[in-house]
Length: 119
Image (cartoon, one colour):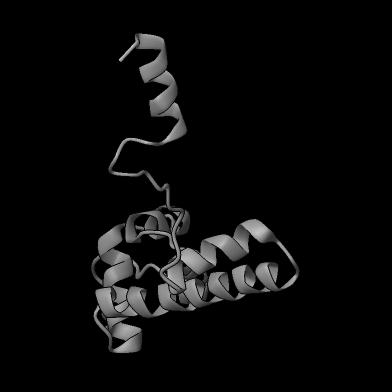
């Protein structure tokens, strides 16, 4: 006599799609929603098929997405986008917008206010 399988049928999880979703910064919950399975199922399949914990797996795929985004930002700056050049300068070169004020109160606006108030 042949044994019948017991329990639920195994749900297949498209880990290729899951990894692409992770690379665009989707959370584990969002990945599970797109794949129409539970978060726990995605977590188990990742561990079974890759040998990695889910946290490590998603971190690796998100790093790929971050580097891709950084490459696109860099290319935008190289193509002359001044806003992106300024932003990258602030992020990587420690540059900032500085507003200088003088301790003696001689800034033009302060002087104008003093004249209006008569002080």
